[in-house]
Image 1: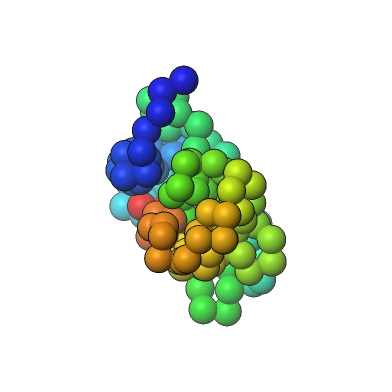
Image 2 (image 1 turned 90 degrees about the vertical axis):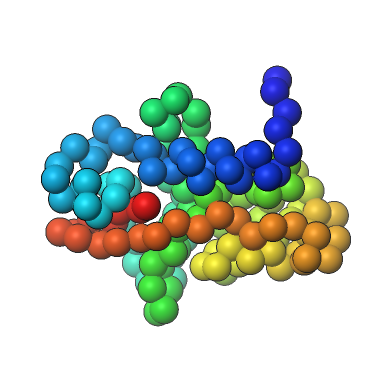
Length: 139
C-alpha cells in the first residue's frame, strides 16, 4: 500500500474531482457546468449524501453533497488526517479511523483526531456546485 500525506491527498483530490463520474458528463451543458453527479431532486434540504465514483485514472473517490437552507455544498469525502472516508451523522461528518469531526457544509474541522484541537487538521476540500436542467454538477 502506498502511503501519502494529507497535503498530497488534498492535492490529488482537488486534481481528480473534475473527472469524477466523467462518463455522465458528455453534453455541451456539462462542459460548461462541470461534472454531472446526480439529479437535483436526490438531495432535499437538510440531507447529506455520499456519492462514490471513479476518476479517469481509476481512483475511487467519495463526494459528500449537503443541501441546507443556505445552499448546496460539495466536499471531498476523505479525512485530511489519513484519508479515511468520512460518514455523515446529522450536521457533522465523522471519520471512523480516529474520530475527527467536520462540518457537513463548510468542511471545517470541528475536532481533530482523538480529541485534538480543531486547528490540528485542514478542512475537507470544497468544490463548486451548479444546478442546471434538474442536475447537480461539480467543478
